[in-house]
Amino acid sequence: MSENPERISKSAAIAMIATVLVFILVAIYANWQNAHRDKIEKTTVTRFTPSPSP
Image 1 (cartoon, rainbow, N blue to C red):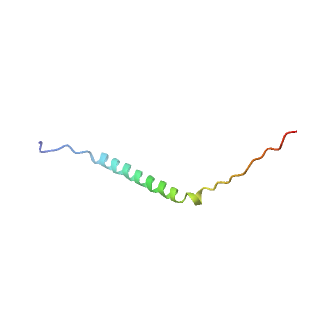
Image 2: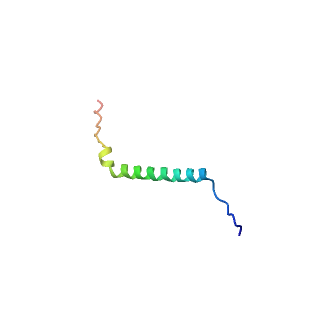
Image 3: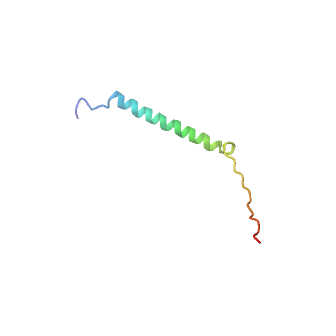
């Protein structure tokens, strides 16, 4: 085994960490919206009966 294993650059590590944090924030936001869907979305169903044609 070599004595100096290759390491990723600091900017690549920061980019990967930032990407993971964004995924975590999106997952938290999506779960919050799913939990509060009853308060956010309202569905109204109206029955449409066409008038009879002569």
